[in-house]
Length: 409
Image (cartoon, rainbow, N blue to C red; front, top):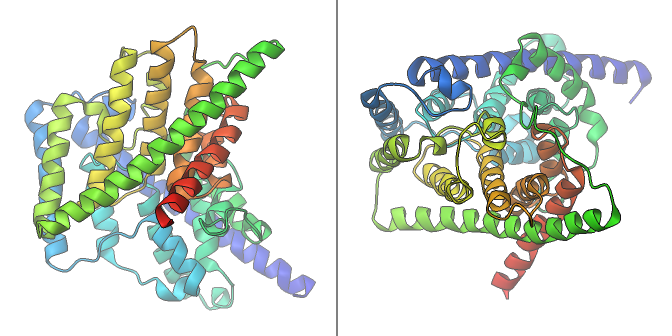
């Protein structure tokens, strides 16, 4: 590629990434507005909803009814993030077709209280909107348009390489290559997202939660040993999530449940959880900081139960057709369980190491990747206990590989 042509591609890719970042920020703003309108300001701040009980019961049921009716009428389900990325790997943007149902189904699942993250909706919307941008004559020859858009949008996590790594790292190829191709789209996407204050929606993580670094060799060794152990625990939790989702999908198929029945069944579970344990609803990203700061006033045992419930509700939502992302629910689940273990044994388990290690490990086990969970955990948890994050990412991937190998044999 000649110098002038390379510069033209870089500038055009940066423009696409910037536009995608702006659109992504506006989409996240729409989700926040709808959530606050229905569930109240407390949810946006990371606390249980203060909306009237009838409304808390009605919102998931109405969303489930709408999702089920749309699916029964033939609406295509919202693809998950990994599906969108696979389509981009296989045939670029040619395989991705714009469908209004994707946006509507994604919004209904998120605003209806689904225990899901927004990245599936965001990535798909940006990929489809990029097709509209590609109709501009001077952008038609730009390679990887959709890749630039998603790279820019996924830059919302706060680290400039996350979008690029998400596109180049795969479960069958954990180490990324060719990241440089995505840098213009990623960097300008972050800028576009920030212009519309998109970071007010994401990335607050452990903000305000101090991390005390080990001050001697014995303490450092203790942290390392616990990181190894809790990395295994986080990896096992990730595989438990994968198995639970597969098992619930098979069980629903065995009883020949249609899309309407499945969507309503998940809605009933969410409506029940809105009364029994409302923190299991939504993505969980806003809840991380108040949870770690003790503002939610939960005991250690209650946090462990909350984390396990979050995993189960998230997996059940996905099995029933409430499609969304898994990053934030997994991180919140690991955070709750890790903090719960530290509260139950405060003189034994270092809390920050437990949280960071398990958050990275559970993602690695589910995704089959190492670098992407590391970057996401570092971005969401603001770099706390980075040694634990690195150990957890490797241990989680190791647990996945050992488990899959054992099943194959």
